[in-house]
Length: 364
Image (tube, rainbow, N blue to C red):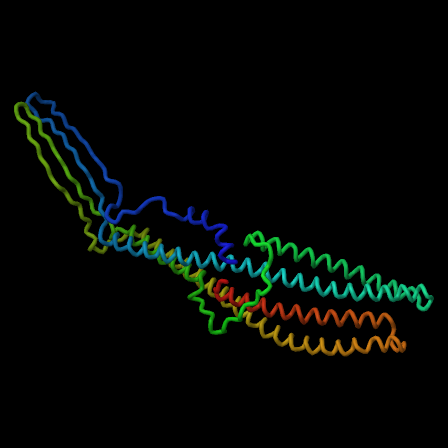
């Protein structure tokens, strides 16, 4: 499922991140040609023509920074792919669990509707036989309308999330088995989360860019020069090679470089603290919800068992006229509501497991 979701946007994503040019391992820029001509204003003077071919060559520090940038770029691409997987996993998890919850609510609303239809038919027969007043029938019919409204609302919600799932994956139906195993509590490692890794790698990349652009990494310049001296009755050709090497061993730095470095470090530390707090808070919140949901599930199972026993007595109580019709109806609706809440809570526990895996940075 995840592969299908990723495939729908892979081609456009690859084209958008592909570098437009191939980096040179030696040249720091485009070679250049320079041509100069100096003409003498004397009759027997010398005219000078010079042609130079200039090659900007990367310094050792710049080549070292380029190698590290290349390695970082590959790691960033890999981490970016993991982040995309995690992002689409979150969308899929949200869609499938929201659909399953809405569909479960719809099914239990339908159970209530079927029960109310049976009660409506029974009360209609009793009213027709003048064996009961119309009050109980109206009560059942009112409850039936409310349940049908609720059922339509849940149906609309389920259809919306199914459409969302189809939009993300291109698949027609949601798989029957969507449960995921809960990750171990020790599994959460913020430094291995794709969001954190991407932040750290981006910081390292910006540091290398600053190093590559510093004065200590200034480029060398190699030039090949040809000169022609033209004098009346005399013509001379000269050829030479020139190399310009910055003295990068000297401790010289621009304040603008220092300011950019410190600004980048401050921004990174702030972003890292904020992201770490966000990831840890989300994880702790989900763990707390997990404990509460499991405790609630035990209570709901117990309540459902008690309501089943009560429901079994309702017919006898109603037949012996020991309980009012309205109370019978409310108790039967409550029994279904309790079973529905237990089933929904069980789904929420499984949804919590999936969200814990999402919070831990684990894709589908």
